[in-house]
Amino acid sequence: MALETTMHLLCAQSPDAQVRTYAMTLFSHLVELNPPVIFLSLSVELSNDAKPTESRKLAGVLLKHLLDFKWAAIDVSTKSRIKSSVLHTLGSCISEASDIASQVVAKIASIEIPRKEWPELVGSLITNMTLADTPVSLKEATLNTIVRLCLEIFEPNSSLLTPYVSDLLNGLILMAEQTDGVDYYELRSCAYETLNAVVRCCNLSETSRIIAKLLPDFVSKLEQTLFLRVVSRNDRVILEELRTSLFGVLLAVIQKLSEAIETSPVILQVDHRIVLVFLNLFGSGSRAADQEAMLAIGALAYATGLGFEKYMQGLIKCIETGLQNIHEHEVCAITVGVVGDICRALDDKFLPYCDVIMPHLIMDISNAELHRSIIPLIFSCFGDIALAIGEHFDKYVPLALRIMQSAFRVCAEVDNITDKEVVAYCNNLKRSIFEAYSGILQGFKNSSKKDRVMLPYAPHLVWFIESVAKDNQRDKGVTKASVEVLGDLADALGSNIEMLLKDCKFCTELIDECLQSDDEDLKRAATWTKGMIGRAFSVRV
Image 1: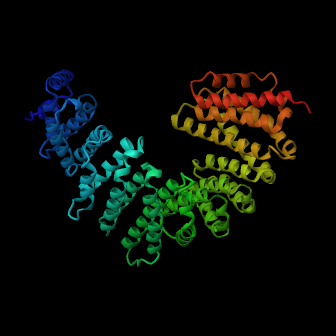
Image 2: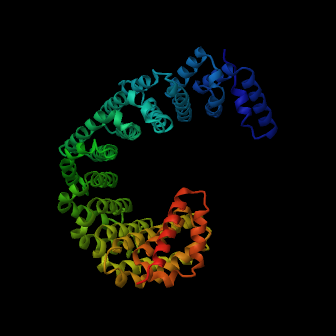
Image 3: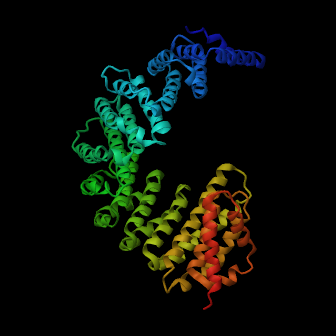
C-alpha cells in the first residue's frame, strides 16, 4: 500500500528551514521503518501526472538516491510494481518527470542487469521504440534511457550488452526508418545517436559480425541520399540532418572496427565508397554534415594507414576547403585535426602535400578573424606534420617557430590573469606549443640538420619552459608537456644543450615536482626526461 507523500515532498522544498528539516527527518524515519512502502509511494508520486511537478521530481531524485542503500531490502513483488511504474512514467507528458524516470530506470538496471535480473527491460524499451503508435515523448525518453544504460552499465562492462546488441541495433534502425518527415527528423537523429552509443559500448570481440554488417549497410544509406529529390526548404533540412546522422554512424562504426586487427579489413572493403560519397557531399550541404563527414575521413585515415595515400589526390581540395572555412570554425577545427590524423597514418608519405597544407595553416593562424580555439590545434598540427616528414620540415621552421614564439609572449603576458576561462585557454595554448616543439624536435632527432636548424631556438624554448614552471596556474597537461619537451630537447640536441641546462635550478625543481607527484603519467614523463638529460650530459663531442 502506497502512502500519500505529496505534502511531505513539497514541505521538504519549503523556503522555511525548519519545515524542510522536519519533513526530511520524518521521511528518513519512514524509510528506515518501512522501505518497501516508501519506495512504492515515491514511484507512485513520480508516475502521477496530476501531482505537482516539484513533488514528482523530488520523488524521483530520492528514489534514485535510495536505490543503492535499500533496493536489496525490497521484496520481489514490490520491486516489480516499482519497475512497472517508472517504465510507465517514461511516457509522461511532463518532461521533468519523464527524464527523472529515465534516470531511475537506468539506476535500477545498473543494480539488476549485472545480477541477470530484469531480463525483459530491453525488450520493453525496444517495443517503446518500434510500435508505430508510440507517442514521440515516450520514444525520446526511451532513447535517453538506452544511452544512460550504455553509460552506466554497458560501458564499464561491455559484455553485459552483448546479448542485447542485435535487437537494440535492429530496433533503433527500424525506429529511425519509421520517423520520416519534417515533424520527426530530430527523433530520427536521436535514434542514430543512440545507435552510436550502443556501438561504442559493445564488446567488439563478441559482436564483430553484427558491427561489421553495419558498415556497408550505412554506406549504402548514404549513397542513396545522393538521389533523393529536394523540392522545398524542409526537404533540404531533412536531407542534411539525415546525412549528418549517417556520417555520424559511419564514424562510430569505423572507430569501433579499428579497435582490432581482425575487424580492420572490413573497412578496406568499402573505404573507396566512403571516400567517393564524401567527395560528392562535402561542402555542398550543412555545417553539421561537413563536420561529421570530415571526422569520418579522419577515422578512415587512421583505420587504413598507408593505404589512405591513394585517396589524397582526390581529397586534398576538400581539405583545403575545410582549412579555408574559418567562418565556420567547427569545420575548420575538425579539418585541422584530420590533417593530424592523416600525418599519423601516412608518415613521410605526407610530404608531397605539405606545400599545399602548411600555407593554409600559416594563413589561418595569422588571420585575426580565426576563432581562438583553432590556434592550439594548429600548433599541435605543426608537431604532427614535423614528426611525419622529419628533417623536411626545415623549410617551415623559421616561420612556424616565429609564430609560436609570438604565442609564447602572449601567454607570458596573461600569467597573472585569474579569469578561469582565460586560464584554461592559456593552458591549452601552452600545451599545444610544447607538443609542437616536441614533434619538431623528434622529427629532427636523427637528422644531420638538427643542430643548424633547431639549436638557435633552444634558448627561447628553455626560457618558455622556465616561465611555465613558475606559473602556479598550470594544469597537469601543461606540466607533463613541459617536462616531455625538455626531454625531447635533450634527446634531439644532446650535449649541445649542456650549457643551457647546466646548474638549471628550475629544471631540477620541475622534474622533482613530477617525480614526487601521485600522478603516474607525470612520474613516467619526469623519469624519462631525467634519463635523457643525464645521457646528454654524459656525452662529449
